[in-house]
Image (cartoon, rainbow, N blue to C red; front, side, top):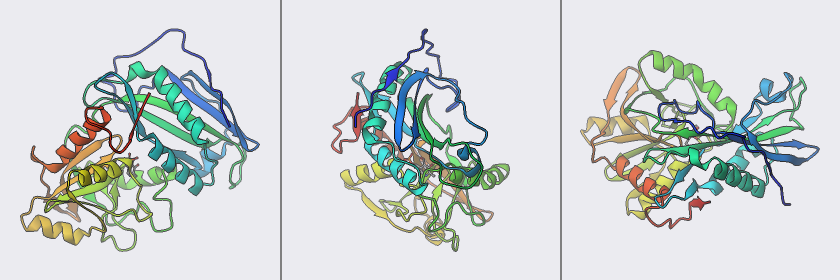
Length: 349
Ligand SMILES: Cc1ncc(COP(=O)(O)O)c(C=O)c1O
């Protein structure tokens, strides 16, 4: 089915100098919106960014039936706009929607909406090396009704915001051995709102203790690394890139997947497997160079300078020649169109 998207432009352009604006604070001028009712999507439109009207009974407000994505667009070195890994983000959006009993957005609607919106607000994309346009597609259950039930009505929207470097400094992380983010069979692999709300309290406690982020561990025994905040956890030890396997309790991160692909291209040994705290501690204590970092769309690569397990801190390697910085540069080269996009990850407008 073809979807026609109506476009209402802002009358006066208002591109702001966003360099000093915190991440996610300033939306671009336009947004996309469509409604789902009686089993179909309709009203697909791009309009000036505006507040939405929602019934106080809207099911999303009470029972957390919400799903979102986080993607980025870049300006390539030759001045084109590139939406990075649109297909993989769409696939993950669908998986999250399935898990939350929400209707899928047809692929052509998702693609076309994003294409049109990002083209329209393309001059908001920072061209600096660390600059990008953060794109947030999301769906909420909009049906107004009290009662725990799968909604019959939804809104799908896309908003964008200019983004720069997310973390200014290497992170001090707390390895969480009490609270749990996700357990087997839960919603850990879905990008649904509840996963994030549930993480606030433990993260706040960690911040009060002087840490920047949490490294989650498995729900059963707190023995194995899971992921961190809004990033997958990755390590580079003994010339090997190691990252927890996709077990169903962590997000299938697009950045993780991209870095794994790039590392393999470069002939770097990659292991996707369980990583125990014991293994990490032993590596640090043996004097090996242990690189630890978070990988995610917003932060790209966030170096970890130390991790703390129940009061004891272990230092990680963050020297300039660290592999994580090379991986980040290689990823940037693909996204900026500097090297050939052999994996077909770029969606060039
Ligand atoms: C919980 C969680 N893990 C990992 C990631 C990294 O995923 P991606 O690289 O697709 O942004 C994110 C961010 O989306 C996240 O929210």
